[in-house]
Image 1 (cartoon, rainbow, N blue to C red):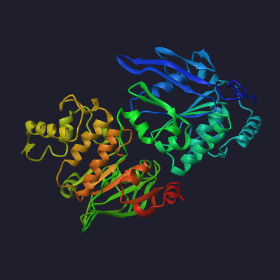
Image 2: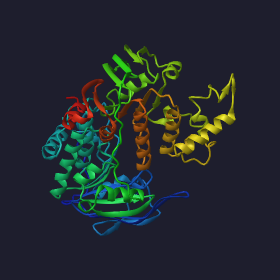
Image 3: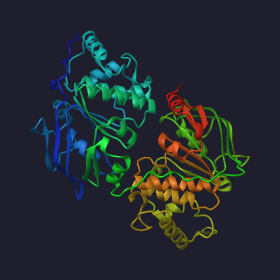
Image 4: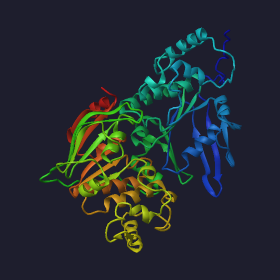
Length: 516
């Protein structure tokens, strides 16, 4: 028996509605996440929402979507106050959200996920002949083309993100809220998707509110920008009237010009890290790193670029002793290297891992204790089997001051610190040694504010200028282009492109990141 599901239930709207948020306030206990914030999204416009972590961006859009109920303020649609108490209510008003992480079911096909995305809640069986006809008609008029019969697990990251947007268009959403939509895409994929959405906006078929930390996307695609800082509205204007420095000043409360990284020319460089034909598996036994080789010299930053999930995580874990290799060889300073704690100490190998609170800290232990994880068994912090607690505390006090770690005290559990200060704590521990040969940094600035990013970049370059060999793995291509001396692109566990940064081809890098 087959019964047809109801057609999409979104309110028929020929043009995008006008969305206005007025005086919105949202508290979580004593924390004021939003304080009298207003935002005006005009019909058929591309609007950027900027702000550092904790500025209130996510809270604002979650209030618009009905995930949170604001304490004060109201939302107007086409000049009429409305109550949005759930995502279903938001959908009724033509508002849809595309999240930073994919929400499709991997084992199901594109067609099945599109049908699943409906809000009708029907329990009837599906007439797939009629559904397929409707889907074919929809795909013919859609800005993106994704094969309907392919399982989600077989799609590339760019196709998965296109599907997330297609689901909202299939629901007839006329306002799209995009939360960091390009964080897992190559530059080419990001530009393609945003360009196609921009065409829909210019045609008057769609309005877009995008949360992004990439100024390039703001200046290239957005018409207006709203800036939040510490839960308050601090700026708004036309993008054409604002420079990147203007927007950064709104976000931070002070003017910060983009700094050119000052690198020292290195003489008599020597190989520090040598990787030969290295392979490693994922947790599920499939190949993650496939027969790769590289060399990192003293006084050099080698950047590894790639979309998340292409083997860079496993490569770093092998080098840091957290994952066994299946073949190949690693040498440090010409000697065979197995990444044991003893060998890391001998060869002066230090690391800034991804997700430091998870991979580089013991969350319940104090700042001082975490700073001592490298040195607690070495003089003057240890004497035989005894820990010298006063020496550990004194060392921590010096590092807190040197690396500007904001903490109530050195006895504060490290999990109570902000993300930027957790990273500073790890940075202090890993870079405080005067004799560093190799620094391995994996996405060291992910999710951090401008001040923390600027500080960490300076510390990495300073280490490089002292002759340290640096392997920098990052999903932020702008970061790699700014810091690296040489860049390598990894895709599907293999190195597809390598070039000195001075002669690197941006288009070739982007194509290699996409697997070409």
